[in-house]
Image 1 (tube, each protein chain N blue to C red):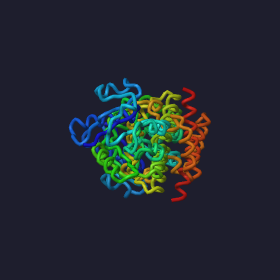
Image 2 (tube, rainbow over the protein chains, first blue to last red):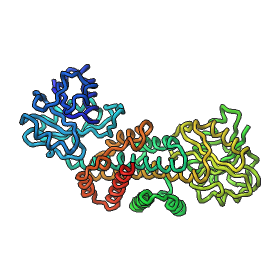
Image 3 (cartoon, chains in turn red, cyan):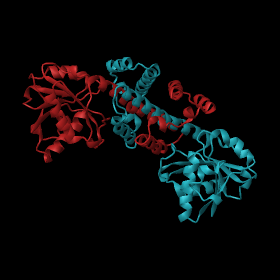
Image 4 (cartoon, each protein chain N blue to C red):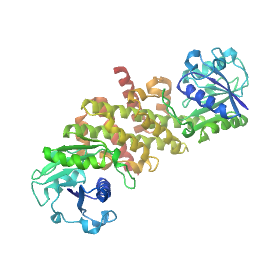
Length: 257
Length: 257
């Protein structure tokens, strides 16, 4: 049986606590034996109180300690752990394995998804990217990851950084473009709901076509007149700038094809 | 019964031809009596040959002529129509009603979606935006639009331009960000497939949360160190520029909240 300790109470921690606690009910191969949260209340709706601790000194023996905490806290929390030579992992897309204190054996357990509160996710569909210093620890991570996800793969720190930057483009920046779309609609008394089928189809199309095949619109068609009209229509300078640079980038890419 | 003539053979035309021909099999209220395609072959897989014409002079009497053609062709094709005072519409998001020749009664029938070849769409979910010069013609469009879509609404030419620009942001530009994500992955030997669950969740989340609530990532968290690392990691100047300007825009928006 693999004993897991989860450290943290933010979005990622809460999703992991929930999925592993659900899993241990039906699967005897794993067990969540402790959850650390600075404020116990933050996770008390998820787990029985006896499992929750708020002092790192109370951490008991476990096969893996999952530090699902903010990027900024990884270095400091990992150096406060009251043990050495055990297996600890962080869950960050943007931090190298070496961000963890080196007195323990280190690894990364990175679920590639956007986690928001009050949003239930089907973990099976979330890719989990793994990295460890030691092969025997990789086997532990691989086993628990495959219990919760259909896509588990080794990704080293350099690749993870590239993957995280890609994720920023296809998720964080994409969401910001949704926000700009919503703002322009609202300025003209149009409900943002009208754009939702388009947003969903644009995402779903990508599972069938490559982004290059899926590209449509005035920049792709080189409709100079419409592009000019749009630029003149947008009065917010930042939005106008985003319009111009993304249009140029679409056309630059087409030229390079 | 409403008699429809469809003029055009591109993506939008083909989707409309298919949906209206399917519909007329079961609904006696409408009839597609003619389809104009400059090259008959382009639509011969969709319709019986007797309905297809390739000469505008052969157009017979219809209640509405739908010009599903490129933005650039609307003015010229509408002025070549061999009749006056009938009801003609275009399907463009970016063109005003006045782009149509004024010898006929004019309107707009704009399905707000991204149309790609070989991609079947559930038309019921596609919002259709309508505009007409005359109220009696609005009733005709409203009737046929409601037969194929659950969301039909009046949108004037100024609103339609705003809507089209919003659509460029949330669809065309979003797709280009997918392309950049794919490129960065491929440069580091990572399969783009790993990003697809994230892409889908980012889009689906927007049906529940507002874009502002849904925003995550280093720009939102103001993780200056990670933002700097990302900028240094991206070597393509255009991509680096896009990274910077979208990061600034996310942070500017947060400040204004």
